[in-house]
Length: 233
Ligand SMILES: CC(=O)N[C@H](C=O)[C@@H](O)[C@H](O)[C@H](O)COP(=O)(O)O
Image 1: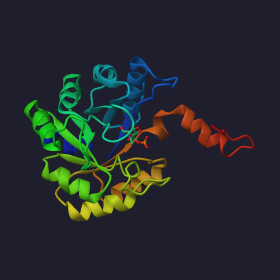
Image 2: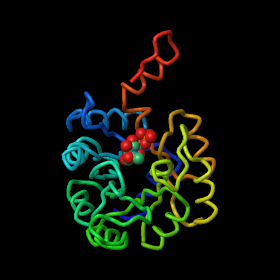
Image 3: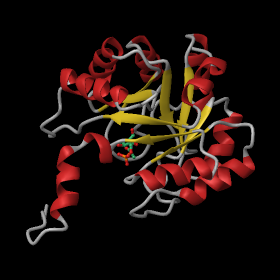
């Protein structure tokens, strides 16, 4: 896929992340694929998938929907864990993704290669790269490494980025100002439709929502929290 085709397809829109953790009741590839179909029915212009479900989830979603697919794999839960190696990135593309989401922070990668090596490999195979960053400095470095899109996915999940209950809208505004020519994707803790609107107004090209759409356990807990018997996990 080329960037010139992707950008108009997702501009000003919602992307849905369809993932389920290892012990989640929805954890199987056919279920994730049906979730992706439901998201597209509801207006998602692209689907982000893979994660702990890995290549099987990406293959299942690619067979189920006809929108651009942002694929990733996860190795562990700390350090660089989102599509961390060149090999992982190429496998994600082979599984049917059009865009590879990969850790775009400046931390050392487990295969010892720089982000540039992943970008070059994905480009050589005809894909695009979404760099998941935590900070503005990460984003500047990732654009320098050749990333096609920058996503705020890891803000709040690294030692140098502020954890918070809500999305990092300030980072969207800072990225928009510092990198005016780069497509910015808002992602991470978007839990309300008004926050999606705010991210677009702050300069995001599109917004990725995961948990608040695709995790019924989380949604149930958010309702239960307003009752006399909130869920305590
Ligand atoms: C930090 C990390 O591992 N993020 C992952 C990246 O793919 C997913 O677990 C998130 O669900 C995704 O980014 C969407 O975010 P949210 O579920 O908050 O809408």
